[in-house]
Image 1 (tube, rainbow, N blue to C red):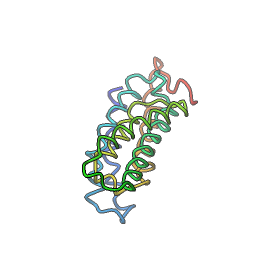
Image 2: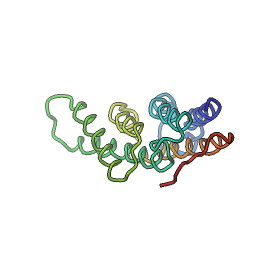
Image 3: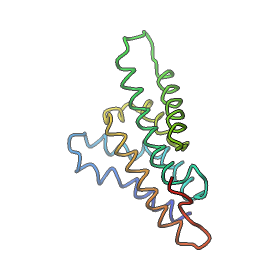
Length: 170
């Protein structure tokens, strides 16, 4: 789990540097800033995939779909809040609560519970620079990063005969 989590997190930390030239429409500072902003949700995800690979929340469907649902919930809530007339105060509390509860509801409907997905939703609400990504946030970095951790998990967790990952695909 030590080596797998190291490789997974290192790959995620390098992801923005690889993506920056591929997406020139986004400012370089924004893409490179993702390196620090994504440590929270992906760090928690790494603990699940590499330390408790047998847990239901660690399975590939839960990781990728659950995190994607969180990203989508965060984006939808921020977009919806932007349509509201100014309320004379900061509504971040409402956006944060809405993003997390929408994530939980979506994960329950899809049978893809994954706690870091709620952190992914919350991060989009709280980190204003990420909001410039809009719906792209659902694909990159959220779905792509989750998929990358699952792929590293498939490799690292199956190097030992004492582990088997995944336990199930659905």
